[in-house]
Each structure stands twice: as C-alpha cells, then as structure tokens.
Length: 343
Image (cartoon, rainbow, N blue to C red; front, top):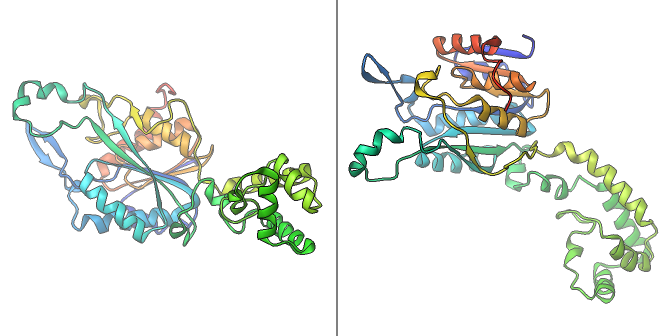
C-alpha cells in the first residue's frame, strides 16, 4: 500500500525518519498515564504502556516532534481524560512549542456509557460520573509565530508580508499626494461622520482590509488616489486566494460544535481498551486535512486512525510499540475494516 506506512517500535525512533514540514494532520490518542487496566482471568492488570515516568516532559517531547514534522499550516488533535495533566501540558505547550491551542472538544459517549453499572451504587459516589473524553485541537505555526499568536484568517490579515503590493501602493500614493495619516483621518470623519477607527485596518498590517466601495470613492478617490475601486478589489481578491493556503485547514461540516455525540464501541467489540470509533476519527480527518493529505498517528494502537484515513482517501503514517496491537492495526488497515459505512 503506497499510501500507508506502518512502523512497529518506539515513535521517538521513527520521528527521526520523518522530514520537517511533511505532515498535514496529527491525530492521536496517547497514553493518559492514568494506569488503564485490562481484565485478564477476572483480574484487572495495569497496562505498562499507560504508566510513564516524568509524564509532562515526555508529552512535550512527542508534541514538539509533531510540531516539527507538521506543515506550518498543519493541525494536531490528541485525546485525553486527565484535566490536571492537561492543564500542565497546555501551559508547557504554550511556552515550549510553536503549537497554538484552538479548541477544547468533548466526546460525549452518552448515558449508556458504563453508567448502568453505577445505578445501584450511586450512594457511594462523591463526584460526577464521567461519560466523556476530551480532545485538544491545535494549529501549527511558523517558527516564532506562536508568540505572535496568529492563526487562521489572522495569519493572512495580520501578516506584514501579505498584501504587500497593496500596502506599498497605498504608501506611495500618500507620499505622492503629500498626505499624512491625520489628513486622511480628518477627511474620513468629514465624509462618513464616523471616528476613523477603521483606518487602523485599511491597507495596514493589523487585520488588513480594503475599504468598501462607498468609503473608497467618498474618501480616497476624492483625496486623489488614482486606482479605480474595481481594480483595487480585483487585486485584493487575487492576493487573498494566493495567501489562502497559508491558513490552517478547517473544513466546516454540519453540526459544527465542540461537543461530539458519537457512541463508544461496546467493551466486547474492541481491539484495544482505549479504542476510538472510526466515524469520530473520520470526521476529524475530513475537517482538518486536505484530500490526499498525510495523517500521522504516533500512538496507533489497533489502527483506527489508519482505517479512517483509508476510508477518506488520505495517506497514513502510524507507529505502535506493542507488537500485538501492531499486528491488529496492520490487519485492519490492510482491508479488514474498510466495509464500514462512510458516515
């Protein structure tokens, strides 16, 4: 399978083989470090892969590597269920990586999720029984851009390098006409009757905009600016399309909110204790990666992200440390689960 690359081993070893700026989306479900247990012969046995020394620094190590391999406009999601750990991770991500936090999403597993077993023991509870998991959503940025804090549309509109031809034209016209910013502000207020707040954005680096036709013809044309409005608008649109690829990928779909109502897999029908539903992963892949893009999962588990990638026409790179789970993932991705309905 040319579009699938699978690696059995430590993801930190495989990271060395992945070039910088080569991945469109990281979608992964790392160990939560909460001591997830598997029942064997009636006994709960804690999985060694879910107990990690120096967990916060370990998390920042793989997140930093993901930022390196992601394209500057790439996207990262990871699942988790420990709010205290997430608070520390978010703080360190902001300080130590170019990733910018975008959304805190909730996977609502529904009332049926393990809740029935607690109905007869409600008197023993002293907190709210959890029926959800969390998914954190990040945009990657260019080096140094995380401190600038610009992603999405602001990445274009507040980038000094974008719309440079129009900014240069505006500055040259001001110089030719001998106009100062104060002259233009005064004339703007005389014509529109409004304070000149929008002049902070018209032809400027801060949330760049061009005026409306009414404002341009009433203010700028009467001051002597030579470009016709339709010419200005056409040049703006051509530049905007050119810069559009700088934005982080996000394709809006129906019911587009940060609470996802998708049932979990039955405990008896899972390949992995922490297995996520393929429909949930498919949705994230469609929203946050381009068609034919590269998706990477450094903690592949039983391969659900890889199955979702093949369902949606994306290329997939997956790593899994456990040989048994790797074999399961390989079997599923090579075709066993591709008959699932495309929701």
